Every structure is written in C-alpha cells, then in structure tokens.
Image 1 (tube, rainbow, N blue to C red):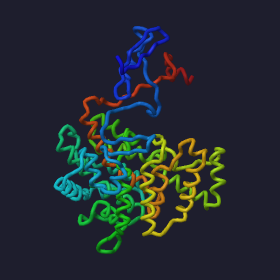
Image 2: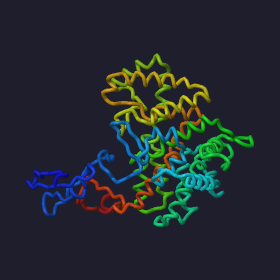
Image 3: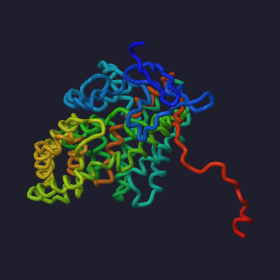
Image 4: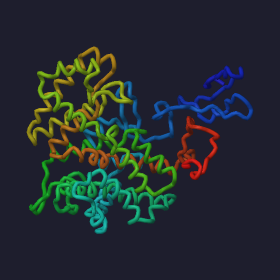
Length: 429
C-alpha cells in the first residue's frame, strides 16, 4: 500500500497500515489500534479541530500559506471586482455561475421574499429597548421556523430551495429592523424597486423621505463586504451550522446556531477590537511605543494574523481599497491614518514578518462600518447577512452528503469514577 501510514503501537509491538486519502486518514482506522482485545480503540484529541477534517466540501477553497481564497473555484479578487453579492450567493448555493435567465429569476425570487410576516415584526418589537441587535437577529431567524413549518421537510429539493431563498431574502430585513429597534425608530419595509444591498441601506437609514437613494459607491462597497464574508470554509459558525444541521433540523434553526457562534467575540468581534486598539494608540506618533508593547507582551496587535492564513489575507487587500472608496463619500476617519502607518511598520518589522502576522479582513472592515455610522454592536449583524449564503451552501451540501452522520465527538473523561451515593438524610445529618 503506497498511500498509507504505517503505525507501530509500542504498547503491543503491532504495526498497522492506515490508508491516506486526500491527505487525510480516517479516525475510524485509528480506532482499530487497541492495546488489548477488549480495550477501547485509539482516538484523536484535537481541541478546536485544529487538524481534523469534519467533512468533504466543494464550496470554498483556502490555501493559507499562499493567501488564496476561492468560492467554487473562482478567486475572491475576481468575484469582488466583477460580480455582485446575489450572483455570488447563486454561485455558492448552486455550484456554478448563472446564465442571464437564471440570474434574473434568482434576483426576482430573492426580491419577492424580502418581506416578513407581520407577526415577526410584533415579535421583534417585544424585545427590550436596549436589546443587542445580534441577539435579536439570532432569535428572529430561529423564530422563522415557526412561520414555515414545512421547512422541516429537508429531503425535498424544492422545499430546500424555497427556504434558502426566504432566508437570504429576509436576513437584511431582520438585520435592519434590529438596527432600527436599537435606535427607537420605526421599522422600514423593503423597497422592491431597489437592489439587494441598496434596499438594505434604505431599511437602515430611510426617514421621512419618500425614497432613500444611497450613494452608489457606498452600495458597491457594502456589496463587496458581503461578498468577502460570504463563506470561509469550516470556521466556528459554519461548523455550528453543520453540527446542528446534522440532526436534520430545519435550516432556520441551523443558521440561528451559526448566528449565535458569530455573536462570540472570538469569531465576529475582531473588527470592533481593532477600532478599540486604534483609539487607544491615538496618533501615529504613539505607534512605535505600541509596537514595542506588543513585542514585550504588554499589548495585543488586533487585526493581524489568522489561524488559516500565513500570508496576507486576500480579503484584506480588497477591503483596503473599499475603505478608500467609502471615505471618498463619508470623509476620512483619522483612525485610518493610524491603521495605514501601523500596517506599514508591521509589514516591515522582522518580528512580525518572521511570525507571518499579516493584516486580515477585520483590520479595515470596522473602519468601513464606522464610516457608514454603524454602532459596533451592528458589525456582527452585517457579517451574518453576508455569511448567510455560505452557511446555507454548507447546510445544503451536508443534507446531500451520504457520509455525514449526526455530530457526536468523543471526549476524554477526567472526572471521578465509581463513587457511592449517600442519601441527603445521611449527608446532612
């Protein structure tokens, strides 16, 4: 066997040939390695799934060493420059780019389903005045499963398609309404004369005017941000969607789990941390002292480095250009000068180069969101809207993968064993 791994168990002296497929070995093959006939098989201990593949997927390809990100084989740079978010969403869901008729039908479906049931509005109005928009989004996405009980029939392809269309269409509405709720402003209904991203901006910012017309440069920049966040392989929130989805629950419940995972500061809160860091630095003159603080372990350099990328995050280059376009409309942010100088120094400093700490997508995204006048608590909501097609593409792939089983990781038990229970009447005597 040429593509195999020979493992010698020094406990028994026995050797095992473990097949290698696609650069991986099956954990079940390791389970055949035992210290004795009745002993448990060998298991892999991998907190955080640092080096464990949980699925086969054709949705997104990442080469972290080379700084490559592709959706269905198409480089993210080309999609961000030449495509739009709904076309990218079609690509992720269907696996190929649409022709003209397919695209028009897709856009029509999404546009038609942007409205939500009036009871959803009542549901959202029931939240406290200071409810976090991400908590509202998570709850309202999960609540959609009660409005569409047929969504549980995940074995029906047409039914799956309808739920996917509904969710992509309604996420901007739910996100915008959570924003308006936090501001104490009336909810704005979708405007089906507008495109996907322009309609979202209208629902966010429309006041007394009869029609809200956003600057096209802002529409394009936000559309690009949605594209950059549309999928990113098996990250924490995608893993949550797949794990919950493996129970064969409806897609609304599975995606609400993804929203919950994204709510966590280690996943969706990095760009807010970047803004806090830039404000703490205060001015370009303070950057050298901050850099020394990072090297001495007294400061943290936020927005640099990535668990996957050991090169310049390809999304960071694109988002840097988008930031320039946005600031042409909104006026520059003094924090941008600090960010640019910090990036310049970090990319030239041997300490950071040696550790392969390059800017990631979060380094500039917070600056853009702030330029739109979004409060920090809305950042993850924007992330979730962009990520929805990716979550759904991964969920769709999961439902049709015959190798997938209900998620049930092993554990290494570290607690007590064989204790004898003493009744309360004796313990408390």
